[in-house]
Amino acid sequence: MERIVIFSDHANMAAAFDQLGYPLDQADLIDYLTEGRFLVEAHTFVPIDPRDPSGRDTLIEALWKVGYLVHSKVGTIAGDGYRCNFDVDLTLEMMRTAEIVKPDIIVLLSGDKDFVPAILELRRRGIRVEIAAFPGHNAARDIMLKGSGFIDLERYRQQRWEAHETLPEPPCADFKDNAVAREDAPA
Image (cartoon, rainbow, N blue to C red; front, side, top):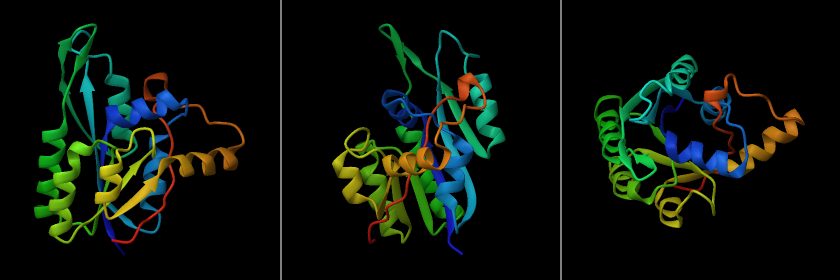
């Protein structure tokens, strides 16, 4: 059975689901991505608003409960909002995982093309890197081309809506994020 590790760029994925108006069921998403495969671990990287450091406590607890190893850090104020860049943290954790865990597959829940160098390095090390994102929305063309496979979250969402006919309510208001679908490309 293939051993899989999931890495989620939470801000990227939550924004995409929210902008498209789709609910995100994190437990269902993990189940979908790991179907027929052995989940070693799942990591998610959650930014914290420096003006409200405990504002995401409920979300973080919910993510731990569904099985994520949650990495968080406080961002810096930028205009009316804040910025919290996790690209280096996420890349370092993927490289550590490649060295220590040696998974068969890494699934990256992000469409950020900044991860392309890390994706290519992981592939050179013999690890299949599947990208899960919304094509044409939060997935840069370059990241879709450079991964070993692509998981189309729009197809996943469509499958889940057809299966449920009505959308499930998120477990808690702060846990609202969104759903997903798999379309693997050859390595």
